[in-house]
Length: 149
Length: 399
Image (tube, rainbow over all chains, first blue to last red):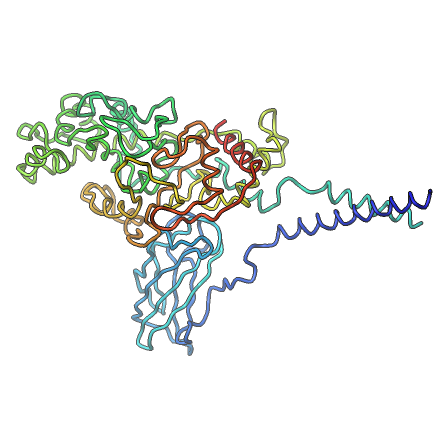
């Protein structure tokens, strides 16, 4: 009888151990950032390799729910600033099946390949995509930046 | 150590791991903290209304807000639908002024934080919003010439102390408006440019005074806010502040699986944007396509931020300047309403489509297709228990 009792106890112990491991796994995976692996780099080569584009907030941090200006900096692959580019902006949240809540525009050329993109607003947390269509003397190209809030 | 004691040790560890599971993860805690009222930023100055923070303007605005003289039939004031003891709304599926409208009255707590006004955002400032019902034949059913005369006769001295001298209205018709009856429109067309400008100026100032008053209407702290502060600081909730297991489940669903916080975000539980969530139209009401039609209306409004009656410079007009003007997602898109106090102000949605929060949550769980355009919702398949928990949580925003 004593050995049967031991087996029951061992079974219970293993079940409890399993529950413990599962809860540890559950707790740690919940902490993992969503959409890990999404390319959120702020600088990249455009789709056909015509330009190197960087995209960052004009004043440091991203603020949710407020109109913000960002800077799009365009250089050739050789590092020469791109002047006189025509830029159109679109985008949205792919996971929520909707576009941008505002219509951002390139409003100013600040020199040194830097263009001010005004009217951006990130109304919710999650993954945002911004598509830029760029047309300059070197040709036309596109680039997509992911912004994760 | 014998194998038996090792087993005991393992069991103890397993039990501890199970018991040590906190109620909320760090990510959940961060989201919950971002919803608490103490994160609401102070009200920004409204540079388009230089009287926005002038106490005398707010006082006059308050008088006008409750004055039934501000209507065509002398029976309707702003407070007819925006009832002060009912969160500044009227508990009706559609507001009733001089006639029955096609939209639910919106509550006013925290309204001055909004970038867009009405369910569809057809106005871009609080003062431009306040003018619109005054001339709607189903709401106040007045006309701007009559309002200018009324202000001069009834509140002339108070008006002039705030806004400066009233114009000479002696030759302005008693009733005239570009939006009124045929007779009022004809009278308006016959007025000189100076006269229409003078009347529009007095009319705009009425809106600016009412807006100054409405800026003082702030959302009160709720049980949820006290719970959120305790959760963030690690303090033990006092008495009724502690959440029941059902309320905790509801909050976890709200910030997690049910995706409510996607749009109901920040301390006002709104992203201040417009979404098609497949809410059905109401039989018998005129066609209502939401944001897509409002875009033209706000662009055409002479009192919008680009208009002649804005104070300050055009740098305040970013929302209008960078407004989305087209796109399928604007069809039947309506503003995300704040959820503060919502539990005690049925019915719900832009035309009072749902009688209870149970119906609202059931709709969001089922996610039916929109009659026009595409709903942004995805079905959630919430259980009865989960739906009830969400409703229980929403009630903590009204306690």
